[in-house]
Image: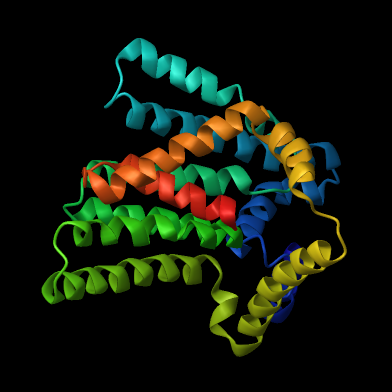
Length: 278
């Protein structure tokens, strides 16, 4: 549809191809890389391109994850940590899927965390880069909006040790600047939202996702045991490891409010608990 729209110079058809939960920029990139195969009707290669993008995103994610962890562990433990992490089913369950930008979102999120770790609460250009990469991740998949608490908690960290009007004002300005960069990156990747009709389409996509979950819960489709057995165990990790992870996240979150240590890990823990709650 997008290729036909470009041939016809039909901007309405171009931005009206649907799939607003997945960013327009992702669809456009996949279409661009598949143009030759679409013209020559090579369906096998058309299916392969999104998977190649996913594999590249996974490799970049592992690279930046290694750079983050090696600052806190020795080389051997760093490698073990990475090997254990990539052994989780989520690393291979989605990599074999077709048209899903999940790992592109994850890739940009890990790069964002890398720059936050590098920034170390100085709110320098590294902080702005972290905001930019998170915004790029959201531009590829709208679900990334649930990751915004990562920036909110990071910006709020100085308030745990210095709660006054001046600090609150400064952090509020940083929050506005950070969110401005995030949404600017999203708008660049999804320019259709600038138009009122495109904004309505985006609103419907958000409402649709909420309504689907709400209806499923009301009709009894989702239960805690079902989530633990089917979702957590299949896509992420063993239930026992999952419960252990929850305990670790809670302890790390507690340290954020008590020890006031300037570390990125309590920030990640709070963000993880927020996403899990959602």
